Length: 545
RNA sequence: GAUCGCUUAGCUCAGCCGGUAGAGCAACUGACUUUUAAUCAGUAGGUCGAGGGUUCGAAUCCCUCAGCGAUCACCA
Image (tube, rainbow, N blue to C red):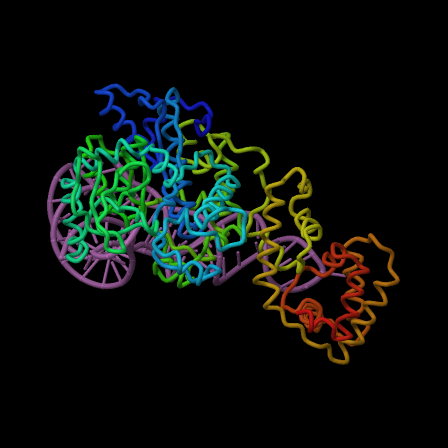
C-alpha cells in the first residue's frame, strides 16, 4: 500500500526541508491535523490518500505522467514526515464521462460517431485490442505505462465506483444539497450554461447516453431526480446505482468526499474548477483536500503544447531519446513555473539527473532531500544507475563514431572509460540505446555521401588493398599509419593531408567530420572498413544514405 | 475581465525562509592526438526588467510600473 520506505531520514530533518514536495506534504499534515483536532494521525480509512485524475478520452500523455510522478514525490515527502502513517496513491479514471466528440486520430470514426454521448466505458473498442471498450483500452494503456515506470498505485474506474454503489452515499448527500451546490457553480459559468446547469447528469434510460439536461425536480425522499429524456419522455430516476453521473466539478468533489481524498494536484487550467470543487466539498461537510496547481507545458516558442497541433515534445518522444528517470528529474523542477518542452532540453536533463544520482547516496540526510533523485529512487539510487560518462559525451560519440551498432559504440566508450561494460553499467547501456536512436533519427538523415574523384579513388583503393592485407586486431596507430601512407603515396602532399581526411569522411561517412580514423578502423573492423571503401567506390553508399 | 507565471552572463536557465551572483552551451587560451571533431585544464563575460520601500545588508521580502506569456470565462 505504502509507496516505498524512504531511506532513513529523521522526521525532524525532513520537516525543515523547503522543496515544493515537502511544502505540499506539510499541507497534507495540516489537513490531518485539522481533522484530528490537533493530532496528526492515520485517517479512519487507514491510510493517507493521494489521488491523480485521468481522462480516458485519449491516451495517457506527458501531463498524465507529470501528475502521477509529482504526486508520488509529494507522497514520498509525506512518508518522510510521518513514516508511521500508511499512504496510498489512486489513479482515478473518469471512464463514465460521455464521448463528446470523435477524436480524429483513432480508427473506426463512423462507428464511434454512432456512440456519441455514451459513457466511454460503454463505447465499443475501435482499436482491435482485447479490451471491451474504448475506455478500457485507454485505461489499460495508462496502467501499462505506470507499471513500466515503476509507480505503486491503485487503479480506480469511475464507472465501477458508480455502479458498485461506492459513490451512493455521497450522491445522496449531493441530492440533499442540490441547490447549494448548483449555486456554488453558477458564478463561473457563462449565461447559457448557467441556465441548464445541474451537478447531476442522468443516464438516459432509452439510449444509455450521459445527458446534459436541466433537472426539473429533486426528490430527497425517494432519492430521485426528474428530467426529460432524449425522446421527450419525462423520467423520474434514482441518483444511485450508476444511473446518474456527477457533472464536471461536482464530480471532483464527489470523489474527494466519497474516497476521502487527502491530496490531489491539478493544472492551473483547472484552478477555477478546483476552487468550485472545494466549495462543494465544504457544502458536503468535509475539510479541504490539499493540493496545488502546476503550470502548463509549453513548446520551444512558449506556446501551449497541444496534441492536435503536434508542437512541443510528447511523452513518447522524450522516452524515445532518453530514460524515464530524466523526465522525472525534469518534472521535479519548479512545477509552478511553465516548462518549455522541446528536444534540446533532454540531454541536459539526462546529465543533471546523472550528476544528482551520482551524489545522492553519499550526501548528508538534509541534503538528500534537496536532491531530485531522492524522490525518483525512493531515497537511494541503485548502483546500476552509475555511468562514468555523460549523455552529452555519448551523443557526440555516436555522432563521431558513425555507427548504429551498440557494440561498436561501446568500443568508443571504453576509450574514455576502460572499465565500463554493458554488464557493469546497465544504465549507460540504456543510454547507448537512446543515443543510437538519436543517431538514427537525427544524424543519419543528414548524411550526404559524395562520389570520389580520380585521385581519391586511387588513394582509397590503395587503402583498401593495404587494409585487406593487414592482419586483424592491430592497434589504432598501425591503421593510422596505413591511412597516412595511402594518402602520401597517392598524390597528397604533406600540407594536403587534411583534405585527404576530409575526403574520407565525406565519401565514406557522408559527413564533414568524423572520428580519428585509425581508431575508427580498429573499432569498426579492418575488414568492414574495406567493404565500406569498396562500396563507396562502387557508388553504393549514396543509395543507402 | 479574472487568475497566474516569467523578466539574472551572447543563448537556455538555476539560485528566492535576505548576507555583495552560478551551471550548461557559445567565445577565447592552453594541453593532448601523425587530420578535424571529441576530450581535459583554464580565461573572460552580469549595476540580477524599471522605480520606490523594509533592513546593518535584497536577485532574494513588500509596493508601484513596464514588457512578454499562459490559463479560465464552451467542454472535460
